[in-house]
Image (cartoon, rainbow, N blue to C red; front, side):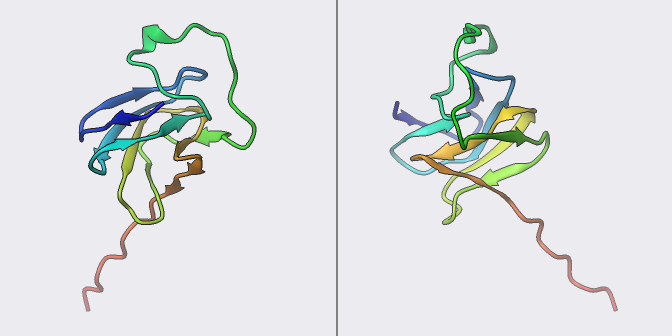
Length: 104
């Protein structure tokens, strides 16, 4: 299911407890999933049916940022769960911390 994302948009997994906030979003419509399933509008929208799709589990870590290869989208995990975020079927990678300059 395609959707238009804006920074600050909240995403709730339909199949697990994972919750995310969009920090950076590409223009236009995108196909974002959490746990292999399109996110729902609120935590109350979870019906308990369904499960994390094969290859889309492993757990999202709270406070970590997830980005695509081109860093056009960035999602911040606000509540951990088993499902991982994906864009157009490709899992998002954990964003690496930038190295601080030396203070010599």
